[in-house]
Length: 330
Image (cartoon, rainbow, N blue to C red; front, side, top):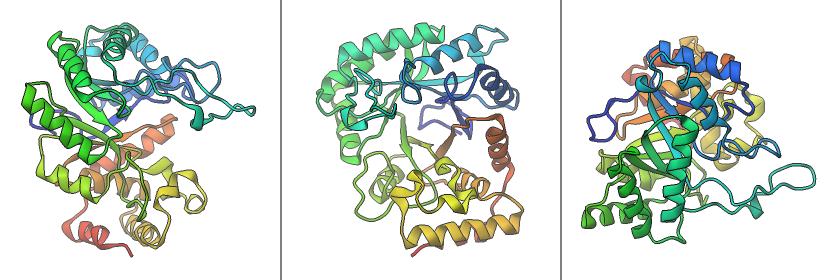
């Protein structure tokens, strides 16, 4: 599918590399990457902070470093993929409590100041072993830094050939519009991709969350097809396949309520009719979306999880089945 209105064709399903090098060992990571590439996949997603939070002592650079070693194996790997990485989500100092759990209340992100962006791209390129990335995201929207400073620096990075396109993640719609207005006014490079959490379930009413696509953002994206949604956590840690996770699992917290129950039931019913898993049905539903068009981003930890997701590419939903899923809810 086309990325925004760039003319760039990207894979229908992106492979997230967040866990590679930490909770997913090198051999398993390589196996997934090789299979994805050999099967025609070409959209890889990482970040300069993946993944410091799983264990004390991890640096947050493990994923980029692993991809750099994989590219170095040769076979034209780097030239065969569309590579995205991010800046702004690294933390100034990892914060853990006495039990070794992340204390998110003490986390301070690196931000999106010009110096941070320029240093970040050079360090990412070094770890990845490449001279450019195809897509460079601002990972966490930084309201403390003037957007003018961030956008001017990103434009310089693109014009220097270190990134081909830019994107934004975890951002509210009004900020996205402000970004686009500034780019238009000053001739700066504008984002072509928006990476947000998006799934079949709809976030519960009253939830304040800048990272999950809501109705307003969907409406905005329908009016601006030059932005492609890259949907992270599309199957919400696999909760659709496991009714035991529907209550109490942290990934369900933003969605709890009667609307979620109705939509979970609709997915389970259709999955039974199709002989597919509910996770596969949800991925297929996302792949069928046209307004706005989007790219689901899967982030499997094991090769078995990766294998379980791939059949969604061949799962065809007819108009009646899509209408049933769309109409479900409270």
